[in-house]
Each structure stands twice: as structure tokens, then as C-alpha cells.
Length: 451
Image 1 (cartoon, rainbow, N blue to C red):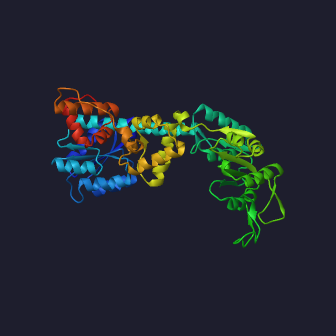
Image 2: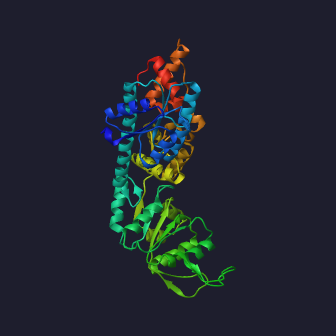
Image 3: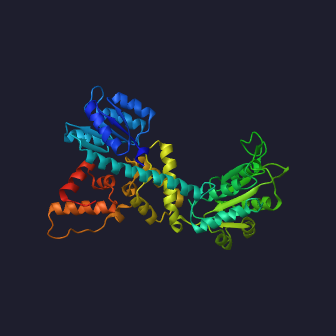
């Protein structure tokens, strides 16, 4: 229903203000009016508006200044500048500062009605998409892991079965697939969730430092050991210890870890007192540990001790149906963190992401979304937002012009093909072609192009 959308009309001329308000109310919209930029700004502070019509020339602050302040308060408002003094310069300035449209007095009620219908239709779709995204994310969210992939669903079912077991878990998968998130899900879903979850990267430290990090040390155990320090096994007592990149530990530490897993006891570095702990161990690796045991790089008995329950996480290229879900999830979170007004992603951009193999998996996708948001000047990420993902040599495609074509015909062809590629989205098409929207509208009209 139109009554759910509120429109603000700002004009210092009473007749113009009331006429436009009457036209819009006839179409069923809720309408507020203001006779100055200052009054409009105060209204926007206390009301939610979908569209704001602003006269360019007004006493006090002009329409563009008022629009800029309004968009600071409510960036999602569609601002439309109205003027009786149309020039190319003012149109360009208005568009650059955030105006969605620029119309010239005298205003035609039918044109206003069509323009508002088009904007409201887009806003309705955006709102429906946001609600759908939230429902989908909730439906496919398992302890902050988002997926609708069948293999991932099987992993979620397995996690539910093993959460309260003391058995050791080995999580295997490529870098960036979310192994730690799976480990945290196992911890959070079980009876140990109130106890600590401690994560250690086994590849980040040298052997002596990792030994002290895991088992702690006594005072005087080595130079700089001025006090007794508990290790991660003690700190994780009652909870879960996550050993990431377990395939990188040295043979000496493999022996010590095997003893802890078998006996549930260990000695601090430099200590003689046996320490007993109740810790569930979850290990992860991006290496093929079974192959490492054949080569003698990893102890076979430790491998079997770790591999009581095995979870293999599929790479992102094998769960491409998750890419739209993950992309929208990252956009929502990262845009909020960065304070950027990016609310969605175009279908063409999603297609670009789905077509990519993502060797760095989910971590690479997340980084790509963040980079695109940082450089995005629109509210929706377009395919061009991810141009950095395409190496220059891959981006060069051979293309030859059809013969006997005029420059105008070539321009028309370029506009038609880009419009089609962008699903008729004017803003995205203008961005791809490197022109502003008003220029694109003029060319569409001139060439009689159907949208």
C-alpha cells in the first residue's frame, strides 16, 4: 500500500508546495511539507521519509545544501531536486551531491506520479530483499556458520551428535574454509559452552615457545621465566582447546601431545609436578595428515588419537550456493563496522562471485567484500566493484566492431548491451559506461532504446 511510504515536499512557494502535496496524496502517499530547508531538516530528524522533493532556489539555505544535510540524517532517502532555472551545471552538481533525479518546473502531475511509482517500486523490492536475506540467514545459520550446502548440513548434524562427547575431533579443510568456526560451534553447542574455548596456532610459534604456550612453565625454567605460568591446557580446563595447524608441530611436541591425549596429564616446562586436566581437544589442519604419516612426517599413533571424529570441510568452490548468503552476511556486518551506506549487491556482481573459484575460500570472499565496500560510492555493490579480482591479462578479450557502423550506432549498441547486462539498472549502467545518469537518460531517449 502507498500509505506506508512517506514523502516530503520542500518549496518556499505555497501554491507549488500544496499542489504537489495534493497530487501525491491523491496517489495514496503520506505527505509532509516544509517551506524552507531548515524546516525540512528538522522534519527529517523526527520522521522517516522515502522520497524528498526539494526546490533548488529557496531563501536561507538552498535546495542542494538542504539535500546534503537531509542525506546525512537519512542516507536512504531518494532526493529529487526541482527547479525553474535548469542548467547543466546545476544538474551535475545536484547529482554529484546525491540527488537521484532532477526535474524542471512546471511539474507535470502524471510525470511526478510515474517517477514516484518507479522509486517506490525499487524501494519495495529492496525492503523485500532485506527481509528475505534476514530470513535466509536465520534459516541457514548454525552457530554463526551460514550455509545451505548439503555437505555442510551433514556436518551440522554431526556436530549435534558429538557436542557432549569427550572424543577428540580432527577438522580438515583448505585454508579459509572456517575450521575454527566449526570448532567453536562444537564447543558452543555442548555442555562445555560455559567453560573456556582456547585457540592456539601451532604454526605461529617455535618449538620451545609452543611447548611453554601449551603446557606452561615453572619459575626459572629458562631465561626470562620469572614466575610460574599456566599453559593453554590448564587455561582451557573444563572447556575446549583448539589446536590449529596441528600438522606443523615438531616430532618432540607430537610425543608430548600424544601423552596428554592418552593420560590427560602433563608436566609444565621445568616442572616435576604432574598436572591433570579435563580438556576436550579439537585439532585442525589444511594438510593431508594421513599422507604425512606415510612419509614419516607425522606420528601414526598421534594421527589416530586425533582422528577419532573426522570432519572434512568442503572448499567454497564446492558450495557455490552459499556465496550469495555469505556475501549478503558480510555486506551487512562490514558496512556497519566501516560506517558505509552499502545495503546490497547486484545480481551481476553475485554472478561474478559465483563464477570465481576462491582459492582462499571464505576468508578471501570476506576480504573481497570488504575491499569492494571501502571503494564503493553507491548503496549497492555492482560487478565493477569486484574488478580487482580479474587479473589484467584475463580481462583482455578480443572484440571487433561490426562493419559499416556509424559512431552513433556503435554508441547505441554499447548502451543497449550494457543495459541488458545490468538488468535495466540505470545507475549500474551509467557507472559501467562512465557517464552520469542524466546523460544516460538523454541518450536512451535520443536513440529510442527500450529499457
